[in-house]
Amino acid sequence: MNIIDGKKISHSLLLELRKTIVDKNITPGLAIVLVGNDPASHLYVEKKEEAAKKIGMDFNRYLSVETTPEKEIIDCIQFLNKDPDIHGIIVQLPLPGNLNTDAIIKAIDPQKDADGFHPENLSCLLANKHCPPPVTAASALECLKASGEPLSNKKVAVVSKSDILYTPLQYLLKAEGAVTEHFTELDTNIKKYDHIIIALGQPKCLTKQYIKEGAVVVDIGIHRLTGDEDSIEIVGDVDYENVKDHVTAITPVPGGVGPVTVAMLLKNTVDNCLKLQQ
Image (cartoon, rainbow, N blue to C red; front, side, top):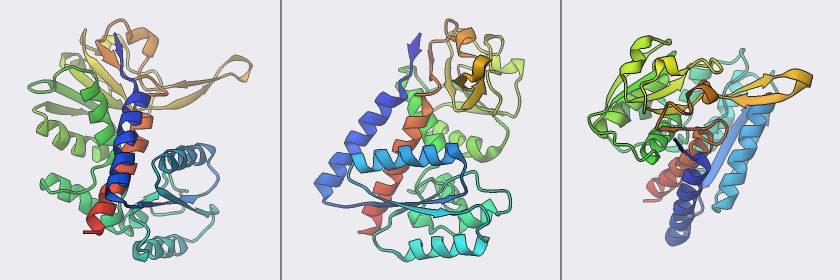
């Protein structure tokens, strides 16, 4: 079994980005809008800041309390849209329930969208134009490619509750010659597929009964489970111990898709910077 090392993939991507920044003599600027005190969100932002600083990218954090009115957050985003030193904007999700996530994401200038979540950029991607790809989908593809297994003429099952992940993945995988199918829940038919990408939000739900022997599995899920004596276990949507001897390659949790996602959003920011400065 091949463990797909997301940290190694991320390190390689960050080295390339650092080289681009030096060679092009640019200083990309990334701004993260963070609302509330969710510990996981703050941890993710710290990881993004650490990676940004490693490659010489300016990092700006805009913090708001959970009760901040939606208009104030949108005003902040519009200020960043106009700032010539900012080339990438991220709204850290999830947002508190009192806020309209779609409205806030749409407030980002599509040319400064670092996560690739803006609907205009998704439409642009599907129209085969150059634009920032959604980072989760792009990261899942990078992990699949790093497995060393072919994608052309292979069948890929994408297991997720919504089209947010599936739609861009279908496009990206089609460009690699793969055929995709969307499953919104576990189904024994998934066992017919050569590769599986899962983001179902259910810890350890994917077991070998759903997996073709020799398949490649990319696990986007991440969960904190509390065990005996308040011990903490970080797991994904895949029951890793159950499937590890059944698959050809698999992403671990943590250390799989997560680090690659951070590198991909930095790549989007660097690409935005180059495009805006043309």
